[in-house]
Length: 137
Image (cartoon, rainbow, N blue to C red; front, side, top):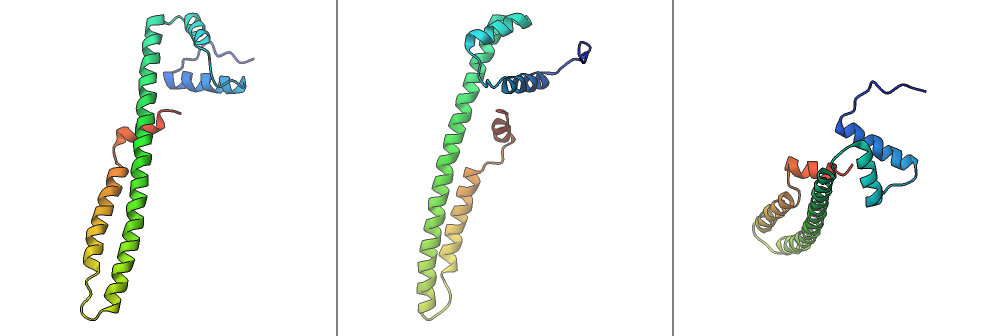
């Protein structure tokens, strides 16, 4: 048997060890009562744990809201892309079938810029959003 009594663990390691132990036990969830018993055995204050539970609940709700907004934005982006392809295909067909200079690229450019703007709004490059996405494990 290994002697781990000399080792120290940072919070991330503790979280990973507990998650892995729960998986080995084939149990991915804990009842609130069991969690509080575990916290009592570790020696943490009940008030601190209750505050942490409330904070985690808020974070989970924010993450769910972010995922919902992201899904809605992606759907709107797909709709706009479909519209872009249909409308510009029709404009190209009209432009090809009529004599004169090419003009369809100008509406395509305007719609393309709008599409890029929509894409940038639906895929923000904020590190905080990336961190939120990765904080669940």
